[in-house]
View 1: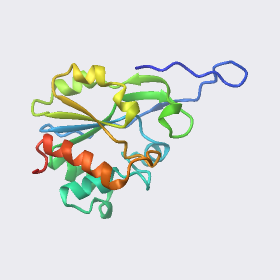
View 2: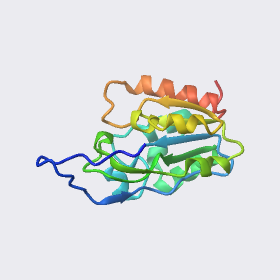
View 3: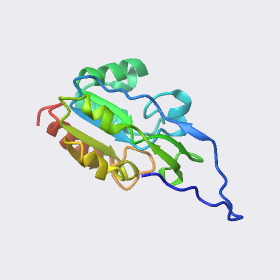
Length: 181
């Protein structure tokens, strides 16, 4: 999963600072664990998952739960999803990256997903939010619960409509028994 440094225009590796991701937001009775790749610049600055205003994570999750999560402060959003059995974390703990694009991730250090999952006896499903996160599927598939790749909620994923993303995410929520079919 670790990516090498990309060479700069002179052919030399030009490392940007090592970035540190966010702590897991995972309840002990988690049934669905959503795994992003690494927080965006906006998320790192705000210290909040999916903080970019055009990221569709919170609108999709709120719609599936029948809640207006966007009107809640971040701490209340987290509490609302945790109470419903949804956990949020990232595949990478640290990386070097200029900007927010997953394609710019270098020198990635993975989070301890096996350690986390070992302590989640009710976990039914792990869902990778997008392609970069899904690069870890070989690992997550070895951990026991069902694993799915979901369409990224990032604004960079413009090839999927909001309705199409919501439908795919709905299937995962139903499979994890967070909502009824």
